[in-house]
Image 1 (cartoon, rainbow, N blue to C red):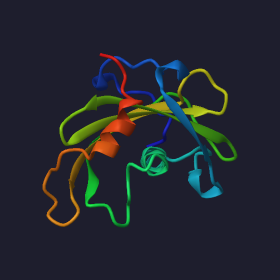
Image 2 (cartoon, one colour; image 1 turned 90 degrees about the horizontal axis):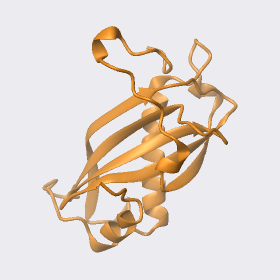
Image 3 (spheres, rainbow, N blue to C red; image 1 turned 60 degrees about the vertical axis):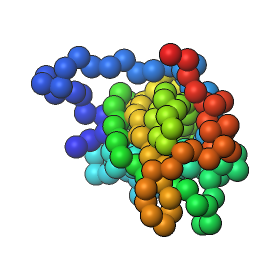
Image 4 (cartoon, rainbow, N blue to C red; image 1 turned 180 degrees about the vertical axis):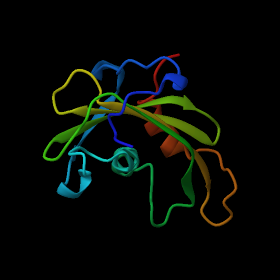
Length: 157
């Protein structure tokens, strides 16, 4: 499936692409030659990698995630992506981040992927992390440093 394929008639009404203003922070991501598929644009699986990269890099920069030694790690339990316009190498993608839900041990991250400087997202999606103990894989309350960092990304309901 191509990343810019239209929704099928059975999938219901098509979502509108979100605007740049809907996101709290942005991270640039450079496309790579290998990201393009045979149809000449970025393959859909790459978008999920960008979601992970944008969120986890931001968390590491905030001091809220220690991927090597932290006691608490995030496991993805749900993910979705909607595609609106193609992206292709050699473009720079700007990943907008926000948090839609902050629970006791889980977080719903939402990411908008924008062609550099564009007002509307080429794709948007979400994933839910459940934070668990590194060793026992049992849910754990969000560490204070993580919760504090995520507060700045939280969107009002």
